[in-house]
Image (tube, rainbow, N blue to C red; front, top):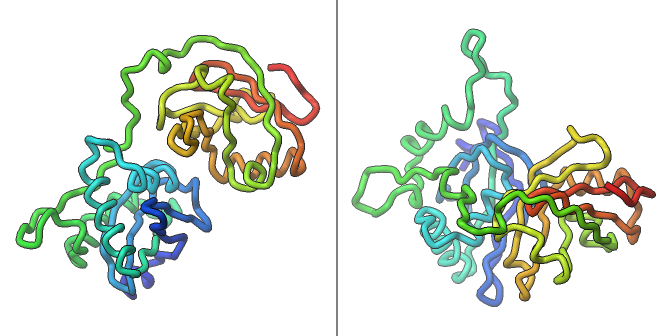
Length: 260
């Protein structure tokens, strides 16, 4: 474990398993991209991977793996095995500060270090079997949203609804969509563009979660960037006006404005 700490890995969260539900908790860097991450239990490095997507989206892949996501399914099972025996599973990351270059070319730290760390440390979960030496590499392609669903067609919608910014919505970077507007949004895990205010260039990428609510209605996940924008522009318990532009894009109105 000290080998990771010595090169800059930091603890940003952990996993829990209660009532047969696996969940991750991140205390920081939810929206950070281009990182190395590691799952560690009692100081033992169990898994090392890299991702170009937001950390919270990559962890969601392990929390709720799709039927074809073999790495996510395998690691999901490993995490549960430890937690069921009251062993902790912590989440560590190494952030790329963008300073590493070769000549004029920026070096992707995560891509450059992953192979070396896996080879040198040999984390148990990076191998497909105890007697196999080949590394089963994590790939972001496992988490790409590929949905053959008519809801994924970007048809213009132009509808509006209100969100009361209670404690959770105000602080945690997400909000739910009511049943009345559920059909206007894409499928579970589909990416969604979120325009923050009137500036059409101020757009972040979130995703749609249709498993968080028992009735399958969408939860719009925008992460820490969404949370920061809401806190900058609103007070808790204010009403946020959301314009549905298409089934995979929305606009959040600035306070006091009600039209797209």
